[in-house]
Image (spheres, rainbow over the protein chains, first blue to last red):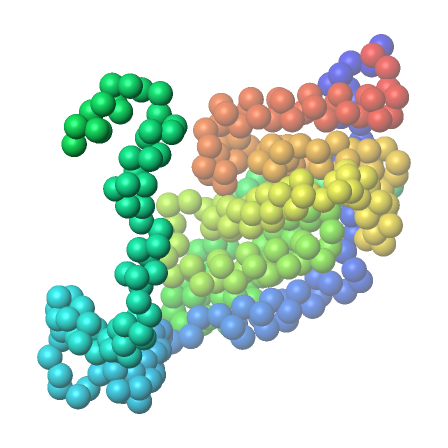
Length: 144
Length: 200
């Protein structure tokens, strides 16, 4: 009877079924030397240590410089004008609002137009007289 | 049939220690090329087979071996000799393999095709695999193990590494490794029985 443990104790299982390509180990030293010593440790001086940080600083400087340049060209900054508060900004906007808009509105008699839709007192009384069934409300309105 | 048992050089301790010492002395005295050549000659083939048994493919093993040597060489300055050089190298190689296997596992989850079927096809077609049907079955069984358990199985079963040395390589207690090996062993046996139709 085959025991569980016996299965893996078979000689066949212990053997290595893999092979390496012909000449692989003979050239392994050269191959690894090229890979490791070719790109491996280099002397790192102060410049080598600072280089990545310097690159980052330069990148930021370029971005900020470009941004400043764009804003300067569009006259958004740099004229020495004091910063406006929010209140002043609104006041400024109102002052500079196109007064032609008010003139346009004045051309049209808005009040006169709306008046045709505003019921008179007489209209209101007639409405309640014909539609309301609440006698108390009717009497009250009549007393006004 | 040629018997190829790749026992770890940790079993010939005194020779290994003398060579470790020589490598480190050459390195520290500035004889870097000589130190490197000795490092490769002494451990290159052993590390290759350790990796190869875990990843199966020669191309993957070669890549991982190169990565191992790059990392080891760059870190040799900081090697404190609180472990054997070979254990330290094994540890770097094993970590490379575990990273590789874990990445492959994730890719396998995302793949529509079965990981196991793909593995079997690839291995059977590999010109650098000359195994019998039975040996192929064992490779399939081991391939199914979780990465760390696979390493434990390989180190113990094929390389006959002592648990104490394995504990240094994997940074786990010998007790935990024994338990892990026992589970791995049982899983492999169960798979072989099913795949090869071996009765009780």
